[in-house]
Amino acid sequence: MDLQLIYTPRSHFSRKVRLLLDGLGIEAALVDAGNAAALDPALFGPNPLMKVPTLLDGGRAVFESDHIAAHLVRTRDPGDRFGVLTADVDALNARAVMNGAMGAEVELVLGARSGFDTAHPRFDKMRTALVAALDWLEQRHGLFGDAPDYLGFHLVSLWDHVALYDLVPLEHPRLRARVERLSALPFVAASKPR
Ligand SMILES: N[C@@H](CCC(=O)N[C@@H](CS)C(=O)NCC(=O)O)C(=O)O
Image 1 (cartoon, rainbow, N blue to C red):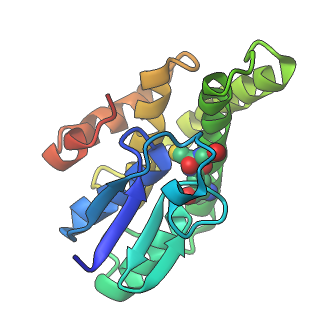
Image 2 (cartoon, rainbow, N blue to C red; image 1 turned 90 degrees about the vertical axis):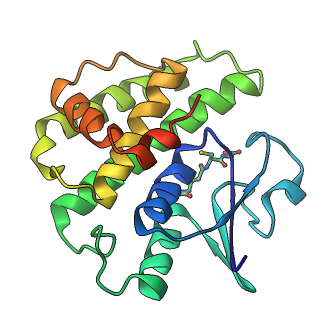
């Protein structure tokens, strides 16, 4: 297969790319890196940062979830059906907030997995920022339209990962409603992390 995605089944950064692939009906072979906290560079293919996702498109490697999404759209979806290439400042702020929140999740989950005591104040800041990010998004819930789009795929990926690891309380009814609506789509439900 031309496309391969190095990922892990629970990786939320990988899931937004998987949702885009599935939404666009693009086939890609999924290559499970195993434990994202692992120290073996070989697990992460050509990515020097030892993170997932990485896309392999023929002979070319593409790093970073949003870069991968943009690459997929530029090469395979000229109409940009899911709004990946948006230049809207509010949408891009929401994307930045969700990426930051997801980064905090990574530190909390992989920190605990690597043996850190996540009661340390450094991790308190991450939990506080994660709640503040969700509050910020809740106040701007109107950015998430009814129709499936990349911003919605991003939100579902963030939300389901917070829920899976029970990182902070999810007391955000408008975001929850958006997530539930999107999760009714079979291809969205299919990649829900367990
Ligand atoms: N900015 C990157 C973040 C990717 C990321 O942090 N992935 C996590 C898994 S969800 C990871 O591989 N972490 C490994 C580590 O931090 O050691 C992206 O958008 O792809």
